[in-house]
Image (tube, rainbow, N blue to C red; front, side):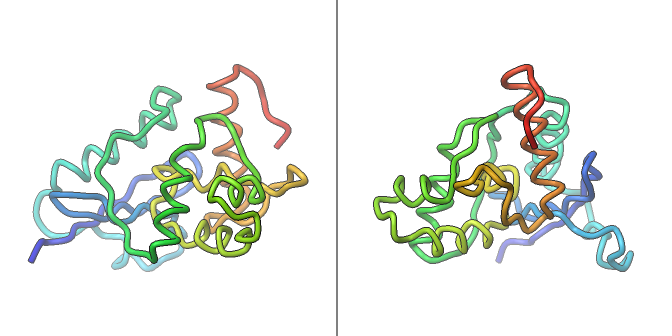
Length: 168
């Protein structure tokens, strides 16, 4: 059985929990600063190279140097959820699509709600860029890390990709 490890990165928009093992990253989620200290401690012993690399890539992302993550990932989900998460990877840095467009990309305009639900179950934030999906009216909707974080991520990406501030 493979040992799982957890570390934390204090990003400019909050603490990010990174979990995984020697082979893949299994979780990257925002956590609240108010969580008990015992929940925010890294595992015993040295961290695997992969978790250190994930932290380094996050640092590069927030510095505006990295646009694509190069990390092996693994998260469990249904076949439909996996399809949604894979489609999220096709949204270019600095761009957004609507949930309706996502459903069209998935081949069925009637799967808006299931696609939105799968988007919300993504536990590899930023790596699998669920923050790049917005409402059809161009409004920010639905982000488990909080809409203010979604706005910050989109603004960062838009500024780096296009050299402009976003409307968000």
